[in-house]
Every structure is written in C-alpha cells, then in structure tokens.
Image 1 (spheres, rainbow, N blue to C red):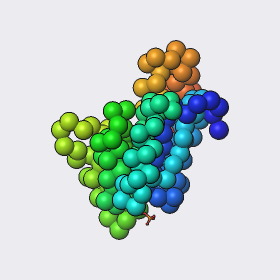
Image 2 (image 1 turned 90 degrees about the vertical axis):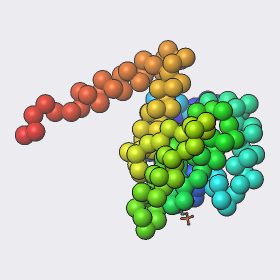
Image 3 (image 1 turned 45 degrees about the horizontal axis):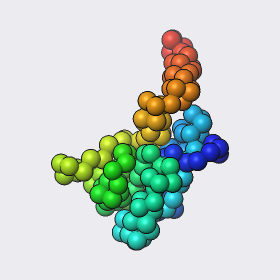
Image 4 (image 1 turned 180 degrees about the vertical axis):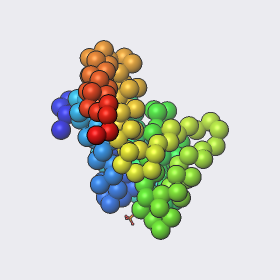
Length: 162
Ligand code: RP5
C-alpha cells in the first residue's frame, strides 16, 4: 500500500464492489498515491456517507472516487455533500449489466457535477489514473511518475500483431 496520508477516497456501495474498485487503488498505488477505501452506501449507510465526507477535506482527501452498481446514487450523493471532485464508476452488479448504474451516475442535474467513467474495472482503473492526473497538476514528482507510466505503457504495445 502506498505510504502517507491518503489523498484519494475510494468509496463503494457494497463490499461486493471491491473486486472492481481495487483497480482504482492499484492504479494509484503504482503511482505512489495513498488512498482510503471504504464501503459507504448512499442507501444503506447514509449517515456514514455524510460523516465521512464532512471530515474528508480536513483529513487530506483531495479527490473522491465513488463506485456503485444498480440504482447507483453514491457518486451523485457524494457530489451533493462535497465540493471535492467526484469521479463516478458504474458497476455491473445487477441483471441490467451496469447500464442502470451508468445512467444513474452520468445523468446528473446541472450544478452538481460527477465525472463518469466506463463500467467496471476499466472505469475504476481510469478513475484512479484520472485522480492522479488531477493531483499531478500541483505535484511535480507525481507528474513525472505519471509521464513514466504512460511511456512504459506505450513501450509495452508491440508494433506488429505477429
Ligand atoms: C449497490 O447495489 C452496490 O454498489 C452494489 O453494486 C449493488 C448490490 O449490492 P449488494 O447487494 O451486493 O451488497 O448499492
């Protein structure tokens, strides 16, 4: 686990979402950014959500990643309770395959923004990378690590398919 004070909160509606959301933690970890993962449901634990977000900024959190499936209100409710940037990750955990969560997360009313990512693990990974990109604007060492990550990623793609 990356050391230091967590700068990114990784919230999820259920413990069952962790298999997807750990991709966000891993992406941040690779870039040396500490995160704080919590199970917080907009529906089942609304008091925990309000309490956590009330203290988040003071505890050093700068970006909130919120992943949820089904009637996925977590990211939107987080955005209602904090002025920190909120990155939403829709999760395919219901019979509707994530399309429900995508629409619940993306379709925010004007004034309360949520940046919505792809459904599932790719979305969680990209939310982690995007959070790092936000933090990197005021952190030169992180900017350099992000740059090296992109270079290594490009170098790992073969030019020929055979
Ligand atoms: C959502 O409902 C959670 O984010 C989860 O993806 C889904 C189902 O939750 P569990 O019944 O598996 O706990 O709130």
